[in-house]
Structures are given as structure tokens and as C-alpha cells.
Amino acid sequence: MTTPRMIANSFRNYLAGYDCLVSISDTHEVTLQFSSHVNPQENITIPGVALDLLASDEAVRRMSEVLHDEFALLLAGARRTPRIGRACS
View 1 (cartoon, rainbow, N blue to C red):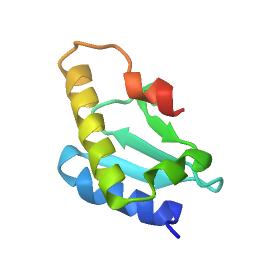
View 2: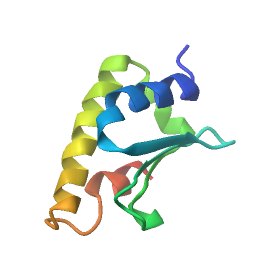
View 3: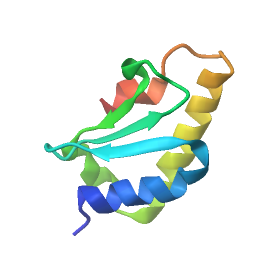
View 4: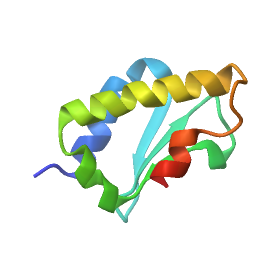
């Protein structure tokens, strides 16, 4: 069984080069915070119930790539809020 901690560690590995803080709450939500964004509304929180969708390392890797692309657009000013954040939170 994949635990929230295992999923968070996978995100840490795949997003290591992107200055991203990965945390787990008491309710098993995984939050991704890119340090270049200080607005908490731009953090991405994945509810514990959605973690089942990320049960494989491959799924986490693919989502990490999407997240990197999303935040690259935010940094470039092409988008004001992360599209995927609304879908995940």
C-alpha cells in the first residue's frame, strides 16, 4: 500500500531541482509550495482521498512534470493562478 509519506517523498525526488517544499498534514493532505510563490493560494494541496490516484511512482512522475510546466507559466507571468491547483484542491 502506498502511503502519503511515500507519495510526498516521490514528489520531493521528482521536484528536487525546482525549489519546492513538500509537506504532509495531519489529515494526510500533501501540499506543494514552490518557494518563488509566497501567496498561499498558489500552493497546491492534494487531498488525502485523491492520493489513491497517485499510487504509482509513474503517476507521481507525470504529475510532477505537469506541475513544473504549470509553475513555469506562472513564473513567466503567462498565468495568474495554477490551473492544476484548482483541480486538485
